[in-house]
Length: 124
Image (tube, rainbow, N blue to C red; front, side, top):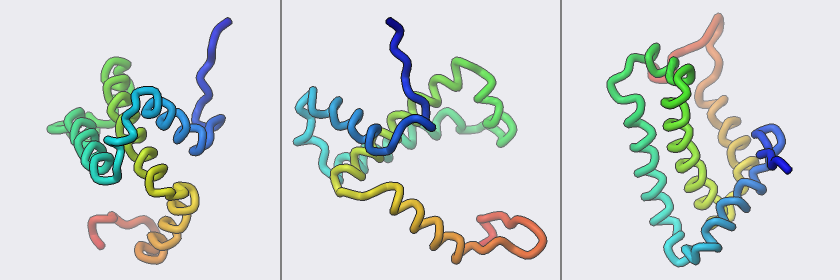
């Protein structure tokens, strides 16, 4: 029997949190998974993700998706970042869906769509 992995559209945030927690529990790493250590680990993994794009032009960065090897390597770092983010949210009992939606509402107020088009967020 072939096992299939559910895609983004078939998976809840709660299920992803459970995948990470099961991994941590199986290795008895809970004593190391406190908010400080998790935030530091997230920062380290984010730097590793940035390394894949260092010195690339914006156009070159976009074509990473067309190179299976490079896309896989970037995906590995994205997964590491996501796992630490999910672990932080779990540890601090943050509901990611509610928090993200509320943040996007605040961002929409802070960065309204300009009349007649889009704006560069760095211009704010």
